[in-house]
Image (cartoon, rainbow, N blue to C red; front, side, top):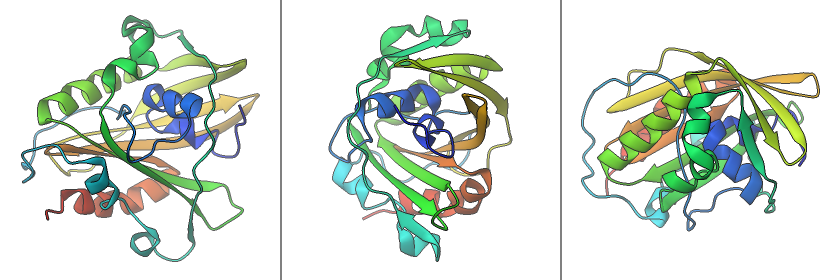
Length: 232
């Protein structure tokens, strides 16, 4: 498994959940997957949608180059990979069990994903994932993973034969949506470390997860949440 700049942004998108994306390929709008990662939850406004959205509907609410502005290029979907994934050094993650650590017990059938590179050649990337389910399912599933991840300041992930050291730190989440989580992860592979920010926001029956360079996540999370909240 290759780890380009931004230490496999694939790992940055909610490490436990995105470990699946790394091992099984990038998510498609029609396939089942997991979601989320980060820190604290708060209550806020209630999103209008009462029922989960289809994957096709979610795909229409993803950010695009027009939303992001000049300098962004959409990344092609990565080919499937099937590396084994193991997590060590974090009892809370281990307690979730192998299926959860690989995303199996937290699959949300309705999902869509897109990734962008900013200012080609700099290695700055931004990834967005949308998941839909009932509010209770999303709150429980995302919250459980967030709490497990942030319970350990440092742990190790073994993807195939590649060891990755992950350190986490809670950061304030934006005051958006019904629930929100945010954290910084430093992913170190062969002495090369990259910082990835993960911010997740639930708006009713949709969870938005942005991952990537912290400045890019901060710049676009409000727009992402706004598009996810759209009706019709």
